[in-house]
Length: 257
Length: 297
Image 1 (cartoon, rainbow over the protein chains, first blue to last red):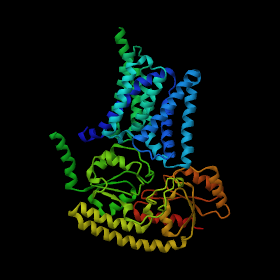
Image 2: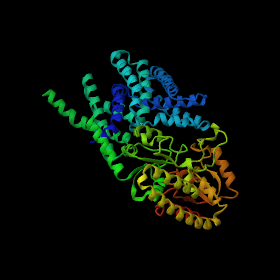
Image 3: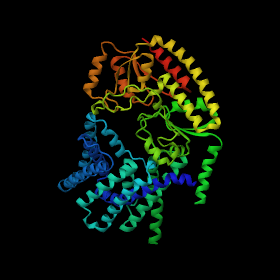
Image 4: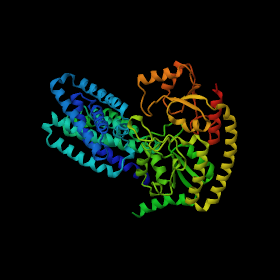
């Protein structure tokens, strides 16, 4: 690979790493709780927040957009935390309903204010190849804070703390890499390492699957000239299968024998 | 560091030694560059006729193409607002940024129509800079060709004469063809049509077609039930000749209306490559006129 091609995928790879850094641990919690569509719901509500801000007459740009998005996501996280405590057995269904309500509320508001649509697209359709190094700094700061909070105060991360961290992490990452890659990086490493029992080992394996899948996807995207986000989703899934069916069984038999 | 510079030089050298690298956002401008510069250029095409120029997925070759480009030619007037600024930033190529000679926006060189008198948010995704689908008016092609020939000459002075000669030759053939098209199109004047989006406004302006309605009542927003029923009510007493549609536009609304009014959906080429015979700008206009002739009332 030439330095030129490297310079195309380098920012995308860093974006991938930042997204994985928060999503691998959060994804394991999401999978444990069985609320896998929460990222779609939170991202959609973040988008709705931006449309609503635009409709209320703020010409939302830059930090204002982020503020509106994160506020909406945090409100949604608060409500979902409350429903989680009130009706834990139907939480996944409530999250699904929250997703369609947020998505369709966007359509209804946009019927009167189409310009918000541009913001919605900006927010939900991030494309990993378009990422610039200077966009990564705020996401880096957020990721460090989220990861630090996660590992430092892990025992508090079951209630509101989890939902709040999730709101920050998803709002930041969806703008970089788009909703498909957010979903994939959250769920796929957690799924692949389902049978790894020791918590720290599982975390390391999850990060490894994510990093290998992401790098392989970006290299394939250069080789085959395909849209990077979509091919990274596929390479994450294939890496996960290889790990779960080949690598992990081999590692396990070795360590037990 | 030296190796990095060596790579940069290696990337840059073949460009300056041989041909101009051109990055074209839409097929119509790639076709025009082809007419004016022929074998002198390497063209990277960002979209095909089957892709909506409003939206684009990022592929590595797009960034590579923009990074290597000596000339970026796009429509402008906000048509590519959703992705071109990102691509320009990501390309890191100072030569094609706004304001530099390598940044050529076709719509800057023509008189645009449908410029809203006031920007009212209730009117839909209106472009404050006017309708950007400029390439279906032959006068616009002429104006852009003249400006583009000057720009190519400025960027590549060694071949300036050849660009000017090609442009003269093209403009001569184009104006002959335009006269023929206008003669044929006299019979099309007043033809009543429905369009999906305002993609054909310049064509209608040129040929005096009557676009009685657009399916997207507000551009970019799906119509409501009340709007559709009003549209049906408005069109039923005197159904138009057909519904014109570009290859990348959603076909469902067109077929819905076509079933209810028993009028045909007319598949237009819209741009170069949008139909088998539309292999260049002449082919595109030929196809456009003959398609409309086929459905004339």
